[in-house]
Length: 248
Length: 320
Image 1: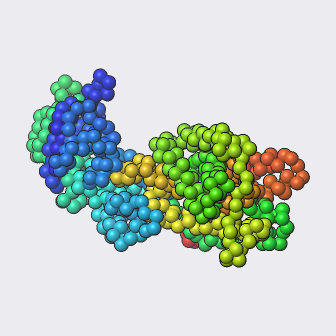
Image 2: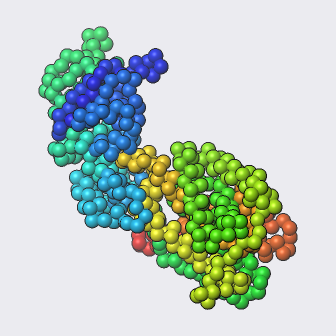
Image 3: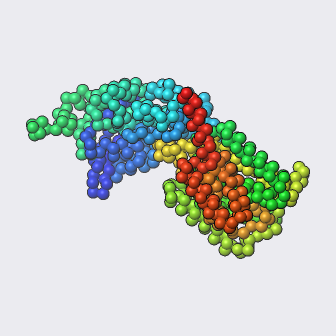
């Protein structure tokens, strides 16, 4: 489904991503973990298309997407959510989702139709609102919505284009402890046909939703395995907790 | 996002009806004022379409207005073509220029976008000014008006011409409102609200903005066609950037992003200009103070402020 082959990204002399490779099966949930500065955001941007790798290849369903820009990748079924909410301010939740759904259907350019009010868009809007728990908030103005609702809508916008591959950048960023579990359940309950890559620094999200976990450190993949293997890994423990003896 | 509210419908209808009445009851001079308002109102609607709903503040709408006027003038006075062909060519010329400017400037944001449009407008001005074929700074005369005698309209009558111009204002407003409610217009609102996100959803935003700019330019070109017929003379003065500046003032005075406001703004500006101009040469000063007051009071413009108040009141009633 998604094939990342030996991608490197240098900023001048700084090697931020080093020979990263990963292979995802259709429907897989992959969580990419790593401490601050491990190169998670850079990897995310390389996948989303906001950055181009210095070398290496990215393939989506066998097609090279390495040199495609953000909107071209989106049209191939790659969708993303943002670490910082990036919504259509001033509009309602419904209008936000309708914009995403119509754009996802490729309906953007007609002067004579009203795709945003069409049946298929309305159905997508309701379906997605149900998935992210905003079904009873559709007519709320985004500006007046709670942070948690805005966070849910952030995911909803990414889902409304009906993507094959969903990239999520720290989806629980800023969500309070009271809502974290609900958010993990939300992500775990997303349709199984969507392949998901989540970049996150919180280990618990990985353990709750991942099929496999990749751990980045200093721009390299230092570990890959199931959540259980990750829990037992000395490498991961060392990165996250440091050397206990040394610190003491 | 644009909604054709009852307040918008009422405002447009009231302003147009008042101007029509003013033209009917007044003599030659009031009719000239009504025509001036109508031309400015069409330009203001076209500018509000891109500036208020697409976030593209343009300082070349005056130049596009001039391109429409010159294309119509050239086709009829030099080329000897009929007015229908000339109209189509003039609309196409304005739209093509707008598409070009929009495509080049679409990835530029903020003040730099404004500067880019200003530069393109000035280029058009210089080309027309230097062009011998188009009469250079002497301009072109001998431009025909539409012949609507078949439906009983005498375009050489000042009242009927003024009413015709008002009808075109309504058509321009209706066209802009229709497009803003279409798939294209909703997508444009999305770009205005969050261009980055629209791209992440798969939209080629620059192309969409270029087409929007082209549509707006076509409306501005329509105003130019009327301007050419009005005086039956065109000169490079039409393309000067201060024309664009005046249109922008009208949009801000009436209410940016309200579509109906700019029509009221055009009427307000022109009437103030003539009424105050009768007492003092320094009418610019009064307009300036008006504009400063409008911007300081929240930047919503005269119509925008009224719309805001009514919405606040409706909101309070809903809460109670």
